[in-house]
Length: 430
Image 1 (cartoon, rainbow, N blue to C red):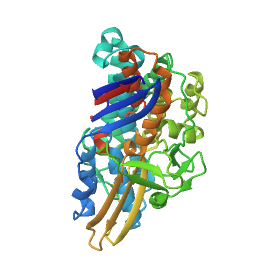
Image 2: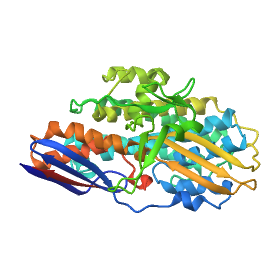
Image 3: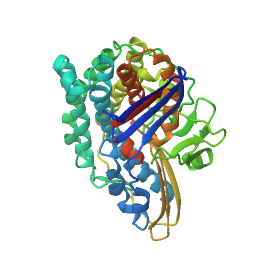
Image 4: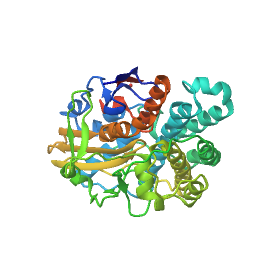
């Protein structure tokens, strides 16, 4: 029996710390484990006993890259419980701040984390020596997303302006106008980004995924919609726990999510959103998608970098729409009164579906909280990708094989810290 182990102790260019171990026996991949070894962070426990109004500021600390997703899921779940509906300009401002987060997160991943895999560099800094103009474009584009966060959230990292019912302060129209000109440049830069990444050399690998994402009635999903799949699932966030379950595995401090019906894995994130909501993209985003070779259905996870670029175009388009139609609200938030009950919500973080559930007592004290991040939901699917795809790369030298494994993980842009950072890959080949 021949045996080989490929081991990567720390996986680079991902958010958080993790490792990868792949065992090969007689030329076939026997097992693949994506190990998340960061310690538990106990945010759900921190929330118990706190007043619900503190929630947006607490959950924003879960992630420095996508704090808005955590804030939006939290406020929507609490508003679901408290019977509050946020509409009009306040709802549009929530879409605008989500646009800012998608732009800065997607562009960070495209330029600094994933593009080096396709161009053969160890990282963005090395890539910048030969692709300085592209990296500069990416950094300027990311800055536009950060400026949206700063204006609406009060600051770029761990924003403080979001509250249950709306915002602590709504921007004036004159404050948004300078963003419009920057977003027009950003939209063109995003189109150039899509054309740039479409020239990369993509492995021809596909799987018949179960895609899961939100699907709103008449818009591309950010913070509302039914939870749907390409296999007929169509539920509200309140029914999430009835259809999905989390289990412990010995090699990870993150929970694995599966479908209760058959225990199968599923995929959330850009590829799922794109496949389930292609008709909800803006006309420009659809036009550029077709131009760069993306049909309405894409099952090649390595092309997710192209989908992220299309979603960046959409986010710029949507941000411009909100700014151009914005009317200052009479007040920055809807009034809320505490009451006992349970509230549910799911929103679309840049990396995928993010589910929150909260239970309150009559005084508004949090009795229970459940937070299911995208990385936990995707972890089982990620390991299946490795099992399915690595066998096709075994002819490669070990260093090239390790890089291909890391690239496969980075297709997911996993936020390991959110799920409980670098990849340790251990390859056992014989």
